[in-house]
Figure: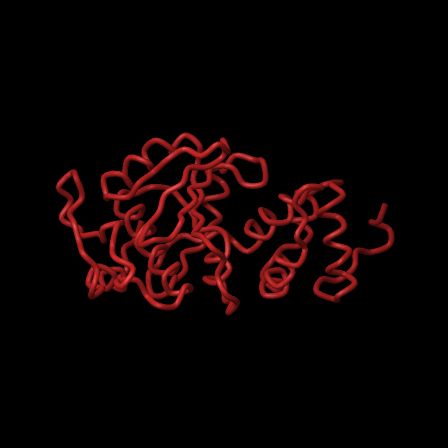
Length: 230
């Protein structure tokens, strides 16, 4: 994967203790147990710093991955506050190698009760390593559709707007149906999303269908032609 000149600036961040990778890699990464005083005061900036560090580690080792979640929305142009963690997605078959890479970089990796992700932390921020999005395994095709974007000056692959919105909408269920959290994301990305593709991928699931109707009534997306409605 192409390394950009801006990536080098990340290694020169002042005020963060450093260590070398366990394998002798000359690249420097911050220790995970830095003092709170070393972290940016702004929570959004702390999350971005963690994103850049983990993304840079994965890039150096050539892993296939894509940024997801609220930081991916930020990379596509959102100005809203970031959520409480950082999300990266990768293929299930790469789980062990990704975990090994992060451990060699000094980051903890552990397996939670959920069987569709691993968890880590960096610079005091939670990092989710996801290999299933909306109950479907992450695929090579999905990662190939990712776009190389700048995340606070560090370039990395980011889920395409269509795949990003689909991953959020398809996750709606009777137990998790927070339209309010996804509405501002849909508004931000509406011109970049292939809404027909998202609708087709969601099929007849009632919760996504209700969300699409919600978006239509708010004039975020155009209504479907009458002949296409059930």
